[in-house]
Image (spheres, one colour):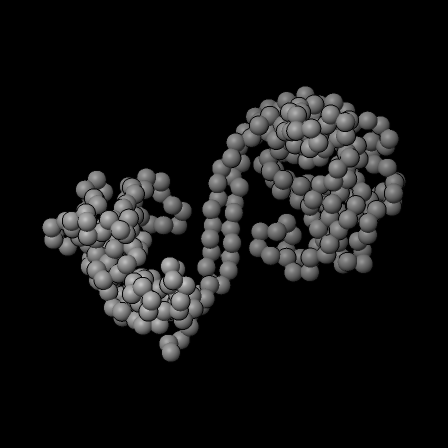
Length: 324
């Protein structure tokens, strides 16, 4: 049995979203060191503000300013911060009910250790030196050890109601980029490890189902139709037929390919499952269903860099229609 492979992988998809008037005011306020909440239909002040009432789902727009200090309602210690978290040293995740608010805000608390954190302690905002209109404009919370900052004490607003705010700021923030990233170690397993090893030898292998006799590429270790294990290896291709394709017009981050380009499903000769690959060596607007293609390896590549036309006549539709 060949060695089972593993590799670190990252799935990352930053996306841009627009902000409505409530979220725009909240994030712009943070840039200006102002924390805004919104008054719900039952009179509660919600921080962070929502655009719709959490009870009635009605649209709410009545913004108010709350304090920059508050009370920890619950917490959890984080002994090993990860990439992208608010602090690089161990810290506490805390829910803080800011003075004048009725709900709690989640953020980091900079504390020397878990013994220094407790429910009911007073904390205050530590603002970031450079603020852009994001939740990270609050660098973190820190213990509020000043006068009147003891456990259970009232903040700067005391018992007074939060002040109404019109939500108007110069140069408001209207959109944000929200990063989404997953770091993990991928273990392809027996079947795909043998498939990847064969690719490094410039061969393409699949596995045949002992029940339905179909050949799957890339192999999955089991037949998705019959549910039985597949162990018999079958060499396929390397040529194949384009079954379907799409033209990519948006350049992907960290992918050095000029747009537009084409990705296609390719039914390799002898396979009963189409694989996904890029088409090159032909203008994007000349790629078509039925186009016959072959893999192109770079000098030190472990897998095909792309597929190119073979120059053969296009395949008849009936020969690949079941693989679309």
